[in-house]
Image 1 (cartoon, rainbow, N blue to C red):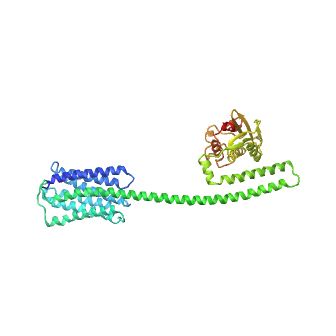
Image 2: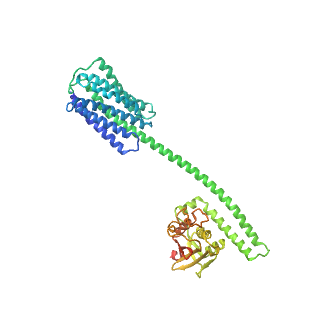
Image 3: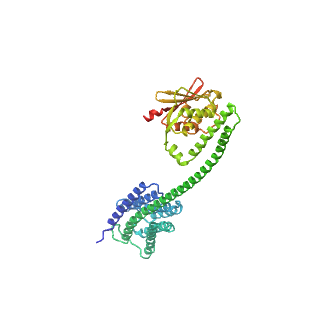
Length: 455
């Protein structure tokens, strides 16, 4: 015993409402997939059309006819836009919208049950053409994608059934029938239920295939970027190796000539002796710095990961050597040799940057000096100059990377010197501060005494 037509329509309403809710929730779940918003609108339009179809005997029949058929047209209009976006095409509104604008008003010309055949022809023509458009878009873009192929066949089948009803209606016209009667419309509503279920599942599968495509594309992009990064790293390593060799060759030549000059039997003046010794010390430090700092792995380990290999070093000797390199006075109030736990490469870089900064900004070169003193369990290293000073507001930023103070007396610079100073100081668990009083700018570096760290 088959259910009556109203029961079938009620099942259609429930099915389309569930389908609309499923498409909406799927859209909310993955909004980044273009097209799902139109699929949800299509499901909603189909559900609304089914509801007005069910209310045919409860409201004005003409209103029910117009709204239900227009909603069914709109549902396929939105499905068409959805499948275009899901197949990487742009939306196209002109042709389907024009078709709906032309066909929808025609229902008003055939309001009564005696015109049921004409309304079926109009509805079948619109749904058939729109369904064929959806199937065509999916079919021509369905290479190796079973979801697209299946949904394309479903739309073509729906289109064929709809268009088949037109000649069938012309050959065997339907007379006056009541909405609750068992008639030829029975099968089309059953087909509407099946179509709603399959279309919803097909659109969800289609969106899933689209998501898989996007994920594969992202993986390929990441893999490609990783390959480029690896090649760039290899090229950088080759460049750094070459650069290291090119640096060490002239530095080695300078040191060799300084050693030869010091070994000459000819007597030298004190100035020449000091200059040659300074050249030798600088070349030795630069050579060691090149060997260590141009090593990518060591730099990444020590700087980027904030890890260093600390060992007892003479702070007094480091300050004396660096001061001699820049020919600035060094004074110490520490009676014995000031020992700290430090990195023997980076500590000279720290103080060399402070002295170079002072020489760059000082008004009188002779005012630049380096002082070492002891305070409790720490050593304080002060580098002073009589430059224009630093505004109090700018003192909070001078240790930032690439920051350059605008004091009207800048002699250029990359903005990295003081950044390195702070970074290296922090690597040694120290502290660096700046103070400007009475026309004197003082940078103070606080480092713990070696015996305190060992204790």
